[in-house]
Length: 391
Ligand SMILES: *Cc1c(COP(=O)(O)O)cnc(C)c1O
Image (cartoon, rainbow, N blue to C red; front, side, top):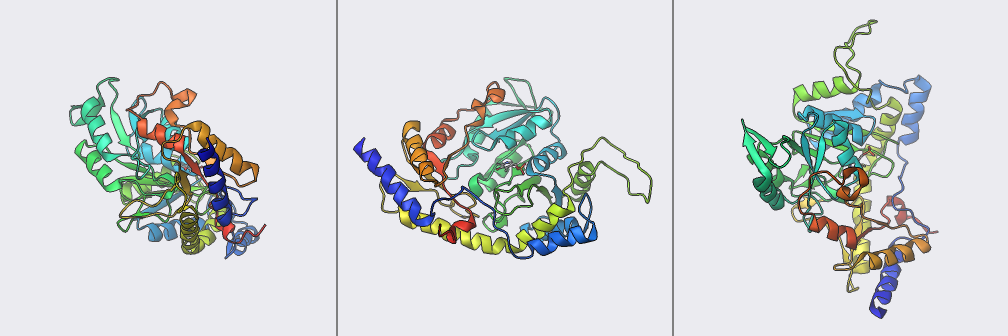
């Protein structure tokens, strides 16, 4: 008991050395050309569903990530939803998603009228575990006519969605190998990992398609927004069409040739995105500096572990996390209480998705690691602004 009180106090002091309260979990940082580009949209009247900044953001992102094609969308959830549809996910099929993720990963599956199937994560990367995936598929899978089915539910397994937790790349290469072996397409949820790579290749470009997010709390923001990444030109064309009401190009006629969505990113948001993307290299350097400062401040304290990037990976260190190995939820909550009380904002990891009321009856593998990470992990302030926060 005394030990745990000391630990809470020591951790709080260490965190306060890096993040001076009051301190939010992740505030956006602006500057650069943000105001000029946004003002340009207003002055020219190009604020809405088409415009030069949308094209430019798509080109700049393709160059930055190394994806052949990039399609900007209204948010990351829409990007993931469309990516899943284009990967061939049909109603009443199953999609493998990590139990430890933001709810949008599972929601995007349900938006396709498909069923999330929860799998466990690896302790080191906090993302999908390739060995567990392989064992699980071998145990529950059944191949019929070259397609994999869940023999317990009879549903086809249509896709696998690895997610790069807090920006730390998961075992993406090995997961792609397992997916290949079982002939399932990979759609990456790279919502949190713009700027992160695995052995030099950008996250979101390993699978058939990938999705990124530019929500206000992500590493760069467009206010709200997202993008689909793919190397497949046919899928890229279809992604553009299906996110823009499938309007046939014509000087005046309204002809739409399929059911489609209005998932476009407005030009106003793209303008902000272009300015933010210009600043991304600076943000990444600052985030690495913040992570290094936390790691140093916490290094002498027994009972707490700063989460670092996995081997062979470069993380964007989007959202820093610390773990209290072996602790229970009561202890974790005492750290959350002590930090939030002094206005140093911390949050627990997401409640494992299989515990949310709408997802309790979904198929799932053993989720012991996800449960453990949920019990012992908290996120700590990570916005670039904390480097200059003197308050
Ligand atoms: C943010 C996020 C999304 C969704 O992005 P939005 O732009 O908020 O719709 C999806 N998956 C994960 C893991 C995220 O963190």
